[in-house]
Structure formats: C-alpha cells, structure tokens
Amino acid sequence: MSEAPTRTSTPRHARPESGDAGSPAGAAGAQQNPPPEAPISTLGTAGPRTNETKKVVRPGDRIFTTLTSGSAIFITVLIGAIAVFLVWRAVPALSRNQVNFLTSHEWATVDITHMAFGVADLFQATVLVSLFALVLAMPVSLGIAIFLTRYAPKKVSGPLAYVIDLLAAVPSVVYGLWGLLVLAPAIRPVAEWLNRNLDWLFLFKSGSGSVAGGGTIFTAGIVLAVMILPVITGVTREVFAQTPTSHIEAALALGATRWEVVRMAVIPFGKSGYVSGSMLGLGRALGETMALYLILQTTSQRFGWSLFDSGATIASKIALGYAEFNNNIQAGAYIAAGLVLFVLTFVVNASARAAVSRGRKS
Image 1: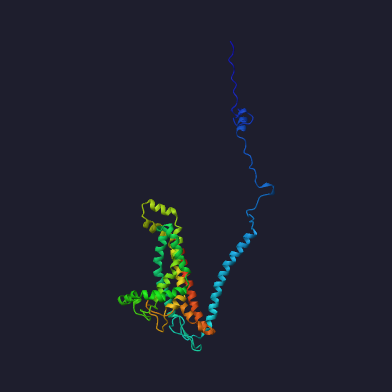
Image 2: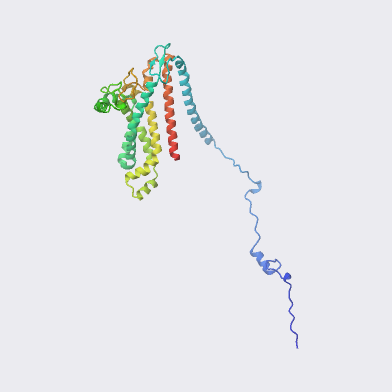
C-alpha cells in the first residue's frame, strides 16, 4: 500500500503578506499606489518671498494723489482762515460794545466811544424768513422731483428740468426787484386776508411792517422760496433717479400702483438726499443778501416773530452798513454779525450731515 502524502504546513508568520514588497501582490500594490511626491516649489531658487509686496507707484499717481490731498487740505485751511479773520476783526468792536452782543436789540455804531450793538433782532429775522422759505419750498420741490422722475415723459422732463435749473442762475437783484414790484402787489389780498382772519396766531398778527406795502417777511420768504427751489429740486431729482430698478419692479410685481411705488420704493430710497438738498437750500436762504436788502423795510421796532414784520437779516444788515466800513471799529461790529452767520450756517450744515448719516445707518 502506498502511504498518504504528508501535508506540510507553512507557519502563519512566514506567509508573505499582500502588502509585502517581496511578494508579487506587494509589488503590484506598490506599483498601483506610488508614494506621494513632494510638491514642486513655485518660489524659485531665490528663496521664499516675504509677505510684504512692493507697491509700484507711478509718477502720475503720485502727482494726482498730491493734488487731491492738497485740495482737501487747502479748503480746510481756507475755512479756518476765514474763521480766524472774522474773530480777529470782531474782537476790537466787541471790546467796545456796551451791551450784550447776542441778546441786545440795539444797533448803534456811529459813535465808536459809545457803541451798543446786538444781533438778537437780526438773528430772529434771519431764522424766520429762512424757515418760512424752506417750509414753502420743500413740498413743491418734492412734487417736482417726483413728477420729473416717475410721471413726466422724457420729452417733457428734460426741458422742464432745464428750466428749473435756470432759476438758480437768475441774479439775486432780479429776484429782489421782481418781489418788490410784481409779487408784493399780487399777493397783497392774500396777506390782508391772513392778517385779518388769522391775527390770533402770532405768525399772522400785525407787525412792524406794512401789509399793504409788501416789505415784510411774508413777501421776502416767498421770494426766497423761489430762489432755493432749484437747489432742493436738483438734488432730490438726481437721488430719486438713482432708485434701483429691482426695487421698483418688485413693487410692481406685488401689484403696487404708481403712487405706491413712489411711496414705498422711491421716497424711502431718496429720503436722505431730499433732506440733504433741503439743508443746502436752507444754507442758501440764510446767506441771501441782495433780494432781502431790496424787499425788507428797515425799522427801529423790535422783531415780534410775525410774518408781517419788517427789519433786516444779518446779511442784509451788513449790506446796509457798507458806508461805515471805512472805520475798522465800526466795520468790526458788522464783521461780528457775519461771524454769527458763519457759525449758524456751519451748525445747520453739520446737523444736516449728521441727520443724513444717521438715516443711512438706520
């Protein structure tokens, strides 16, 4: 009988693993999964670069930057120089003043040894006529801007906008003559009716001016409203025209009417520009001189916060006193009044800018 073949067992630890390089399977695995290669450096042979990148500045860029920076610095220095000049020239007159400059209603500068001058009446007249003009001009400007941007066809909006812009180019003296010779007689019945029927309200009670003559705050305010109308309208129109089309289309897609589009999309978007334009108009009204110089009648009575008062604003008072400018002390009194107007205009513009910035953030 033949013997059965003997099975020889290979020890488990001696069997080649699949990952062993010495075995065929290991060699195949090594070929299929080669070791990762080191990344190729893009830094070149010059060594690693620093984080700081050299910025190439061309001569043209350097010149342009210098010019723009110099312009900003120049205007700042110029405003500061004007303020310093006003203070420097006003101090000698203020040192001779025998009354409180801010609260006195007197204005006597003929005798430089007994000067008594104050800006209380001038300040009140300036504020009232400017605010009255602003109240009249703001709604009209808003309506014109909405009409030109949302309702008027292009054949109408272009020429009409051009005509409104031309109002800003009309000289102030022309507005003054028009207000005195044309507007005052035309609005006389309205002024008399307001004075007769609404005299219980302090704004329409009889004042120091002649209602029939027309040389009052009422007439001057209407003329001033016409003068600042193109300023407010121009800024508001440009801002309304920048309303995103997506906002308008979204409102229309929701079924909004044309007025609802204006109310929900156009006005909220352009509100800050409308306020900014209104404050620019107010600044123009505060400093207006020649038109008010021609319209307002001078008086020695105190200002009573009535639209039918006469008197003078700060700017028109300075124009009235040009004959006294040969004397430095007398001129200093008017320069002190100009300093008050300078500060008032600066405060108004700064407040408007703060309000616009606050509106944008909200």
